Length: 90
Image (tube, rainbow, N blue to C red):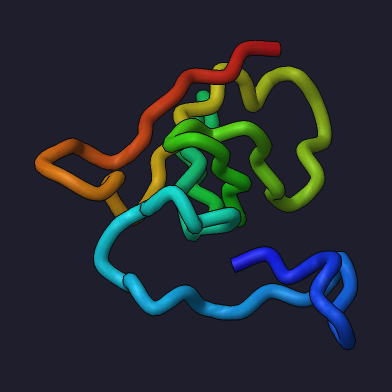
């Protein structure tokens, strides 16, 4: 849960939300996997909004040869759905 704007917190403050089994409307960040074009797998933090991946924070990528990137959330959205899954091009 993002707590920016809450007294005593700032933009670096996040805490686990009560629901730990799925992505809900309160989820701001979640774990994911990024698979590079060469098969290398990395562990990013995904920013989510309205059930969609809006940003991927992963170790700096050195060149365009890592694209396309397959990005997946570890958890599924709430309800009978699959994990979030997007393809990111260069």
